[in-house]
Length: 393
Image (spheres, rainbow, N blue to C red):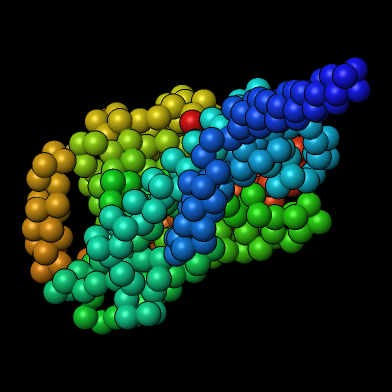
């Protein structure tokens, strides 16, 4: 009898242990599920969608995605901060570290949202974005409208930021316009909402520390040639500023023969914010056009100008309402192109010849100074801070 009771209690005890163990395992599993990211499937799909993008989303977005990816997969940043000269490593570390205690679940959701928006943007732009010129140009679009040679900066999804290829194509297009006898005037404008957002800072972010010196010298050469092409352009050159303009797209405006801006255009030269210095002959032309004090406000203190302010400071010729900008400027350019071409060319060169060599000297000096600036700790830290701010937006 006692043995029977012991066997019965033993069976009950074993069953209880199994039941308790099963219950504990279920509770542990449920707790684990609650703490694990809840969007694994969508997260994995987003990673696959990223591979289908044909357009580089740019370093600002990629840095943000990097930080979110690390947070989603590993949690809070626990990696040591890279050395100062490892710009790429520092930018990645900052992008991850700044997420602090963000949960892995929230990081997954944010990562998914970025990928979805990029996919949607690319689908939308694929039907509206202009193409190049029969394969010859990929970053700009060149058209001839009667005797008007039109250069369209054509990276609208990147706000027409200038990468190396665009610099090269812009130079080639200006040379082509100067040699084409059927062309009377050349115009430059932008596709999309921006005229140009200046240099594509991806030019800096992808550079290894050991390559910074070579990058600075290579950038000097392309910049010197680019600005020199504006200085020597023999025909009337007109800027049609359809939207915000930044950096070198602003500083070179002093080398155009006329500049017409949409009422929504703005003009910004944030050189000191980025630890750099003026280019495009602006260190000479801006004080000449605006006066020393107002030029300093723009070039040293990063004052962003509205279109009316830019006109008041003689940086642009006139302001045209946004609603009629395209129509009015098209009509104006066609009228200008009917003027006697040799008379216009002769008159332009007469005015430019007085200070052509001066402009080339200024250009060379500005480029030499930028080589030093690009390699400075101040510039590196400023660009790093810029990427960090952008990835926070």
